Amino acid sequence: MEMMMNYYNAAFFSKVLLVFTVMCSHHAMAYDPLDPNGNITLKWDVVQWTGDGYVAMVTMNNFQMFRHIESPGWKLGWAWSKKEVIWSMVGAQATEQGDCSKFKANLPHCCERKPTIVDMLPGVPYNQQIQNCCKGGVVGSYGQDPSSSVSAFQVSVGLAGTTNKTVKLPTNFTLLGPGPGYTCGPAKVVPSTTFLSPDHRRKTQALMTWNVTCTYSQFLASKNPSCCVSFSSFYNDTITPCPKCACGCLNKNCVRSDSKLLSTKGINTPTKDEKPLLQCTFHMCPIRVHWHVKLNYKDYWRVKIAITNFNYRMNYTQWTLVAQHPNLNNVTQVFSFDYKPIVPYQSINDTGMFYGMKYYNDLLMEAGALGNVQSEVLMQKDSNTFTFKKGWAFPRKVYFNGDECLLPSPESYPFLPSHASYGPLSSLTLIIILMLLIFLE
Ligand SMILES: *[C@@H]1O[C@H](CO)[C@@H](O)[C@H](O)[C@H]1NC(C)=O
Ligand SMILES: *[C@@H]1O[C@H](CO)[C@@H](O)[C@H](O)[C@H]1NC(C)=O
Ligand SMILES: *[C@@H]1O[C@H](CO)[C@@H](O)[C@H](O)[C@H]1NC(C)=O
Ligand SMILES: *[C@@H]1O[C@H](CO)[C@@H](O)[C@H](O)[C@H]1NC(C)=O
Ligand SMILES: *[C@@H]1O[C@H](CO)[C@@H](O)[C@H](O)[C@H]1NC(C)=O
Ligand SMILES: *[C@@H]1O[C@H](CO)[C@@H](O)[C@H](O)[C@H]1NC(C)=O
Ligand SMILES: *[C@@H]1O[C@H](CO)[C@@H](O)[C@H](O)[C@H]1NC(C)=O
Ligand SMILES: CC(=O)N[C@H]1CO[C@H](CO)[C@@H](O)[C@@H]1O
Image 1 (tube, rainbow, N blue to C red):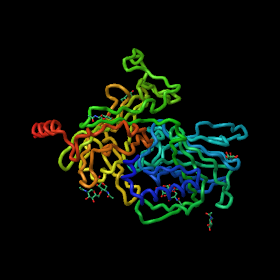
Image 2: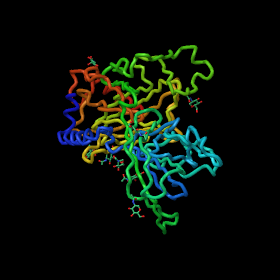
Image 3: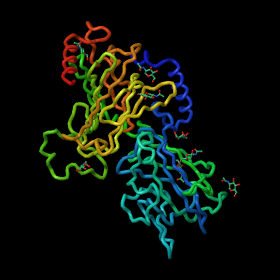
Image 4: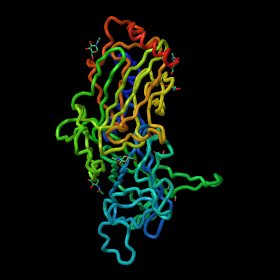
């Protein structure tokens, strides 16, 4: 804690406090200090009035910097205010039709009071597609890839109002992404969206637009963390493991990595309830992030980061890793991962997002021999702040796929041996490093 206090300046704390106060007064809103503006916004643009209702384009924008929606994708729900039905949809579908028995000739697509909508899978026929649809509900994070952070569908609503005075907005929006965690606010009428024609020479506008904002809270998603962090360093042989039962041990099943069960055919197939099949570990987390302080040069230092998957039933696609460390303002090079600084507060540049390189390591494979990805980071030292003391070299916060990982307790961090002072290299390490450098030349 002391270490953190040293680092954060008072101005930053007061800013955080201010934001917290503001946020707490909106108790439904979750708040993530590393992504204070992150949310998922649903926008309904009424593009046409019909005989008994309207046609709306629904767009889902993921404005979160590092939290994406992964397979099996989003599930969106709401409650109609009146007796509305869905005549048809393009680019998505209601999971259940419900009771449409009072309709004779034309049957609606869905008559449920509280419809649940899912995206179409890739490869549906072209006449059922619309721009930004049909990705199996997978939506990228804004920080990683803004172009993949959008999902859209079109809905034709009947038995509804047919003017902007008589339309009743849907209520009680819910979003599974894919599990729990999101809370959606009420729909609010906003200024109508304007659309630019493909040749950019004509503007049209929606007849009416409303927005819904959904925010994520990790506490709602699960009561235990879903990842943990372990540490090691070149200056101390101790490996600080993930905290015991970091992700909860109660009612958790696991299989040993040498179990015969693992050779059973189909054991890796994801189940309907999306339950993990965990490898037995001390921490019982599906994901472990290891931060190794690897090398010390005169002006630079080097960290090795490894992410290991312990879930036999999960391939993590488009994974993200966020770390907060004061030296991330001077990243010189990141090897084999992509990297992007995240600057939630203008004045402070201590947070960055690592993610896999496309087609190379953006897939973190299921548990087993291939279930890990790794990278090295070279950072330039700032002689005013740099030290190996008091665990300074370890991250303050780590997130995997937008969920905060449990760090070891500060007293268990690898210590700098007390005889070493600043510029802390034992002569043996120095010799080894020198030899390595010569060798690498
Ligand atoms: C949602 O996120 C966007 C982009 O960060 C931001 O402009 C907007 O104010 C946010 N909305 C709410 C209600 O927080
Ligand atoms: C409504 O949502 C869109 C994104 O879907 C966003 O660009 C726009 O700023 C939002 N409007 C308001 C008033 O929040
Ligand atoms: C409804 O439409 C009228 C004009 O047709 C416009 O003046 C008014 O602002 C609109 N109201 C809303 C809530 O969009
Ligand atoms: C929306 O949720 C509130 C509170 O849970 C409930 O009282 C209300 O009846 C719901 N509205 C609809 C239309 O289902
Ligand atoms: C993970 O991906 C590999 C290769 O695409 C596939 O063989 C395997 O079945 C997948 N595992 C899971 C759990 O989906
Ligand atoms: C933040 O640090 C990165 C290096 O890690 C640098 O490239 C970037 O320009 C910095 N951004 C700001 C706003 O200082
Ligand atoms: C290495 O760190 C541990 C704490 O994690 C400490 O107990 C031990 O004394 C340290 N070793 C040396 C040689 O300083
Ligand atoms: C030693 C060094 O390069 N320090 C730089 C670290 O980054 C900050 C801003 O991001 C610069 O102001 C420092 O000069």
